[in-house]
Structures are given as structure tokens and as C-alpha cells.
Length: 225
Image (cartoon, rainbow, N blue to C red; front, side, top):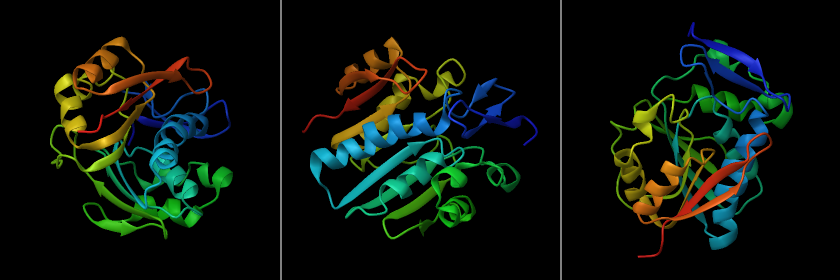
């Protein structure tokens, strides 16, 4: 992928820069810090602490580097919870890129990270004792989602000014419809329009402190029917 370049972020972890969009896959202030704060701590862990489920279904918009999935594997290593993780990605990165990322040097789980990327698309793969992954090579516009399917949404698309088509109220409605009651939607984005749209779609929206280098993030919860 000639338009993709590996970069080092402020916490020492790598990210990728899409030079065509002039957009990074993660925060330049710290890739691991951002993903851990937004998606794991305020998304997955929040849901588990609140509801004590035996199984959690996750839908991720933007598999990207696989960092969120790797952090999920790490977070669940000693949990009594099975995670069923569905992730979409229109443009998967190749081995030349993911093999150069330093996440496993920091986090461990080298075998799991390799399998996250090498596992077949369009098929459920057991990544660890606690995580099953279904990667779908498709777009948010084209993916088929079943209503009431997911407990947690990792909305990790490129920023609204780079990929506005993914942040329309129509696309958000598609995702919200796929969430279960009490489902949790988390994203690094805290734009006013996003919050207004999520409220219009019936979610209870919170503006939370962001990860290092970013003032705010959003968590939105789908009320019980």
C-alpha cells in the first residue's frame, strides 16, 4: 500500500499514516494509550463492569492495524467472558505493514496478533480462549447487520472531515439499530453534530475526558426497550 507509512506516536507505539487522506490510524499522542482509553476502558470494560455478562458481542468499524482487537485479547485473558468480535475493513493492510508494528513488543501476544491479521476473512476464527473474530472485508455502507446484535460498538472510522460518508445520521442509524438494549457506542470523536445525531437516534450521550492529547471522547448508551 504505497500511500501508507509507519509512524511513531508519543507513547512509543506505532501507528500508520494514510498519506492520501493525510490521516493517521491512531492518535499521534499515543496509539496504544488512545485505544486503551476510548475502546477498552470506556467501552468493553465499562460494559462488563456494569452488566457482568458471560458473553459480549462487539462490532468494530475499522479493523485497521488490529490494535483494538489485540487490546481486547489482552483485556480478556483472565476474564470469565467470551467476546464475539465482528470487524469491518474496506482496505486491509498487508503483512509488510502489520509485521512492522511494535504492539507485541509492548503488549506481548505476538502469536495472537499475527493470527488476527492472517486469519481468513468472512469466517469466524478463535483467536484465544476468550475471543472469537469475524473479519469482513467490506464497507459500512455495504455490510449487512442484524438489528439488536451487538453489546459494544467500537466506532473507529477515520475522522468526519476525512470520511464524512461514514458519519452521516443514516450510517449511524444503521449501527445504532444493530445495538442491543444497554449497548454501548464509543468513539474518539466528540464533535457536536455527532452527539446531536446520536441523541436524535435515541441514545443517552456522554462526553467523557479524552485520551492524552485529546480533550474529549463520546460514549453513548442505548436505553432499555
